[in-house]
Length: 121
Image (cartoon, rainbow, N blue to C red; front, side):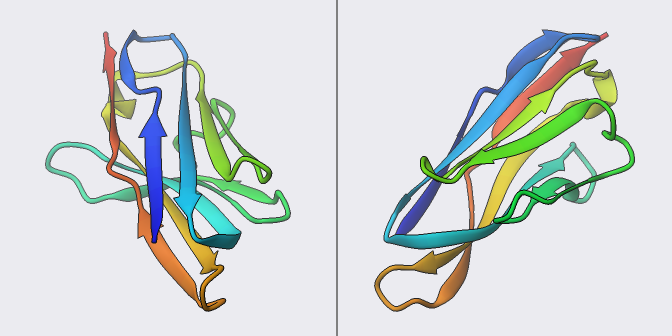
């Protein structure tokens, strides 16, 4: 019913920048919070940044001041601008959203398929 598709990952040198996008499509009435998570090899998935429907944001301490989350409600898209990247930012980045379905007005959560970010030293 709803798909989340991430894009923008890739290989970048330490100190560089990348912007991730996550576009939601399908039977969408509205989207509540949109969140970026990441999972590095051998580690648990961790929250990176979250943005509410009203634009309030919150970040993991490890990315504060370097990453910026934003959203375009008209496009059902969330972005993650990542600056001053470090090798420890290397991970698969996942988009997560709570979507109110237009079919039955019931909120459901969805995950994207993930996009790889690799930061070389």
